[in-house]
Image 1 (cartoon, rainbow, N blue to C red):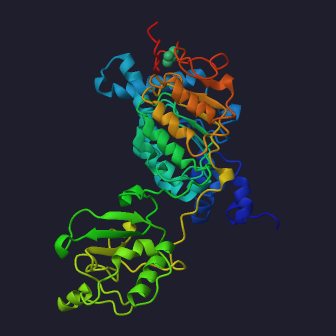
Image 2 (tube, helix red, strand yellow):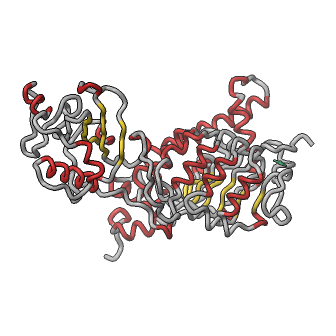
Image 3 (tube, rainbow, N blue to C red):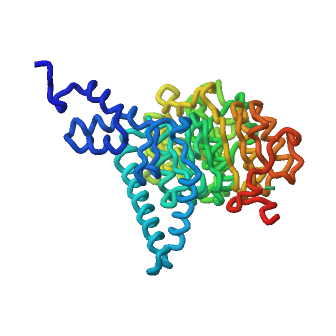
Length: 458
Ligand code: FES
């Protein structure tokens, strides 16, 4: 009576059993029934992904730090040969070598299939639980795939893209603050198409440790200059009193401030005393007796009686209640860049959308290893970007071998922002007399033969 058929076991017991299974067995279990299919997609079962090895029948599932997961040199060598065969796909002939090549091509096609399966079927369910992805030496990996993976796995700590063909566009989803603040290990060795753009995105995505700075005196000049979709005041000059279609000056403000300013303006227009935003509001006071609100009404435009602010010519017609001062040659309205330019009544502070949550500072910029070996397009600009927003306080391992355009000053700036850097794991070009020159390790690419190095011909 104590024995139950396996399918009838409670889910928590089944889950315990599933923890002993590898990815291949989990996939089989997922095909048994709906309940098993849901259980097999439990996030904690898929923390560490090795698509390339799985496609070749090596079903690793431990963390990448585990020495058992380390691939041997022979395995890496065969991956390189495979990717060469993939590149020369068009030259297949009947020779023995060609047969070997075609089996390599078959392996890469399997790899592509596995990658697509993971991206389309697995990651949408388990993405937030995934901690590490090892894609090193993948010949089938594209920038688009990496982009999809990164947007589905926001809590990655370990990402290995060694010797892949990806470009900067792979990191598009890192273009907002804190997009990958948990990242600790990033290996881009041999990714020759990577440029400073990736490093700028990485620095942004790692979060911000820097203390808040005072508001900038000079306002931004375009909506695109301010991420986060804040509301804005737009002032337009209308030469000769006509409608303006020229470029507008834009001041970006917090919605709370904006509501205050508008309410103050409304009060002032009613004849009350303005108690806030006076300096900004002053030029917008309509002259008595010549209000273009009346002109609007004559033209049959809708007036916003409830808010007392009519929508005015050239500024507010299309919106659902924006404000405009029609006299004095200037117009005012509220806009939202997040609504495709459609105008709407400014929200009060309590109605405003909550700001996007920022990562806690203690969990920001946790990067411990960064390898850019052979990324020869990286320059000082990229290194400086990494040094911003509080630097990389936990970085211990930094490989800049083969970064041919980095200079002493860029290196110095970055190293100053990396107080934990271990000189034994700090590699850069032997021809640069940079920081820690006596104690840092030299370039690792001298004998490599397939990664960029200024002395590779010697
Ligand atoms: Fe200069 Fe390798 S990059 S020695």
